[in-house]
Image 1 (cartoon, one colour):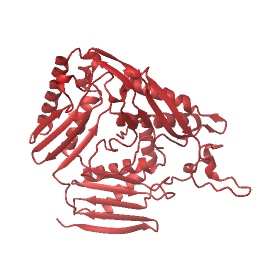
Image 2 (cartoon, one colour; image 1 turned 180 degrees about the horizontal axis):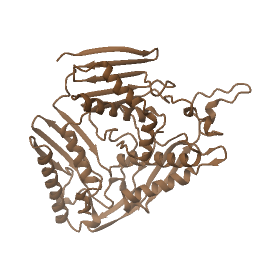
Image 3 (tube, one colour; image 1 turned 90 degrees about the vertical axis):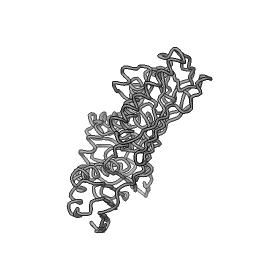
Image 4 (cartoon, rainbow, N blue to C red; image 1 turned 60 degrees about the horizontal axis):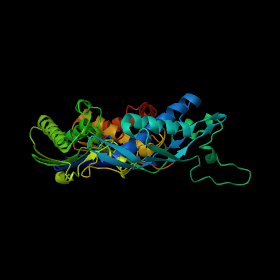
Length: 419
């Protein structure tokens, strides 16, 4: 396959690099997905829900999304006692809400603490109902401005008003959308059949699926790890059971077989050309009753921790043999934070390139702090198709980057999943 590469300066501050005819991704695939009840996924999803809730409130109150970030949120596991047919919480789960938020805009007070506490309790009521009375919310939310505010005689730096604007018009992003940081966004498409299978299996076993609705014993702290090479597919995964619905060891073992049967059937349906081998709850020592049996369905009940950015990437997977970056996108401001927007945009560009031209597409967007959000400092596009023109690629890229206000709206209404 012939490879073509071009570098074109968009302006003095922007560079566009396109490489066509690159090799397809390797046949060997290594994939991980953490399910809905995994502590890291809980932290990611809660941080993003806080950002959405805060954004919607300030939009209604003052007509703009005020400055905030909740992307340093952490969950500290509680303590529990698990018994066949029951159990109880011994210590609460601590929710550390770390970050910054605007508490007022002129005379309009934003009830940040009340919004956060209400959102945390509502989130866990929907996700892990057994924890609803066993949460301790600890708020570490400031309104301090970012570095760069130099005070001189008789001049108050504009930056000091970022988290306490007198009027909405003071917000710089109302005049121009600039990158808030020097950061990186990465996306690729399409998912391989094995990657799609891992995502589906984790979601069916941990999310609001028919499988779980019919099996109240099935917990949500699921993790799926898979290695595929040619026809071979090896999967190690864990699925907890909820002790109030498991009266004895034999019931646990029957339930475990149901999970294995489901995974095997799904693999046969989605990956008929693969020879799949599964290991479930590999740490179980059945004869000693050391089992993946939990009171709530998640290890967050008992000592485990969850932190934003340690789990699934923006596309919902952890794929070390694919391009990735380490940004924690959840909870970041959806208006101008490149750590969130560029990851979403890069993925969308790659998907559109694949849909339009076929083949594999990979996109990297790199910001320079203070530069126009819609004009990355570096744009790198790599495709397996060698017969695609740079002009047509640029058109797709431009179509997504020019749509950041729409992207912000999609993030706020929750139509884009980030973990």
